[in-house]
Amino acid sequence: MTGRPDSATITTVAELPRQFVLGVDLDGVCADYYPFMRRVVADWLGRDIDSLPTDVGWEMTEWGIEPGEFHKVHRFAVVQRKLFLEVGMIVGAGPALRRLSNLGIRIRIITHRLVIEHFHQIAVAQTVEWLDRHGIPYWDLCFMGEKGAVNADLYIEDSPYNVEALLRDHRNVIVFSHAANTHIDVPDEQRARTWAEAEPLIVARYHAWERRGGAEEMRRRASDRVAG
Ligand SMILES: [Mg+2]
Image 1: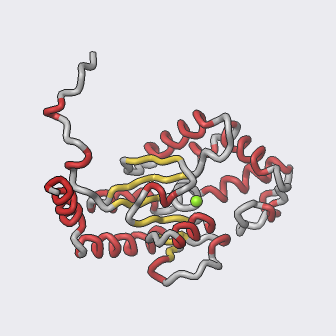
Image 2 (image 1 turned 30 degrees about the vertical axis):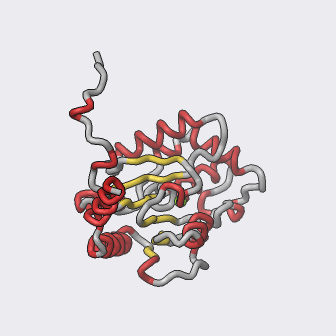
Image 3 (image 1 turned 120 degrees about the vertical axis):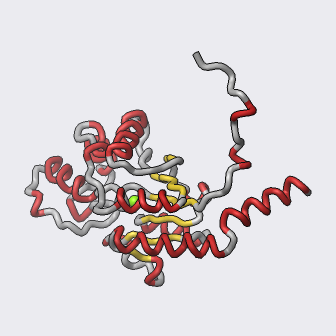
């Protein structure tokens, strides 16, 4: 039986030290979405997988997906092929995130997977199971497209639309390289092709945040607000 929570034993979120928040995209950053979808699309179209180019743009038109057909293929991939459960992990993502989490970074998963209506239960359930299966450490799980709204200190993202929106919003973002985002002009310290490249960039940002005051600064500002 669960009783009423004892307020004396509960620490309110506001009293906890503020952690550095890393906003982590899933598809194309942690989940190896394109190779899986290439197999699915080859089956869907009845084509030999080798005839589909490995480099593909955001809409997958290079694979012969007709405009307007993407949603059907996507639904088929999730419902019939368990896309979000069976998709592979991008090399090194899990171990890198576990090390970053051990450093004290808060992992906030932010994904826009609920793009198609009326099958959210299956998409969310597969996602949660996949995250645990691969040992991805996280405390927050956000299903939303407007990534800037969840206020991470640093984002790692591959979608060109999201990257451009975050940059317009003056957010810190590391672009995880993909054929569809190579046109985005960012300094070297804002682009990673692999998790081996991404991890030290993230650690450097985290340490810079700590040097600027990090959690102590956040606590001081919070207590000033209370005192004021
Ligand atoms: Mg993505």
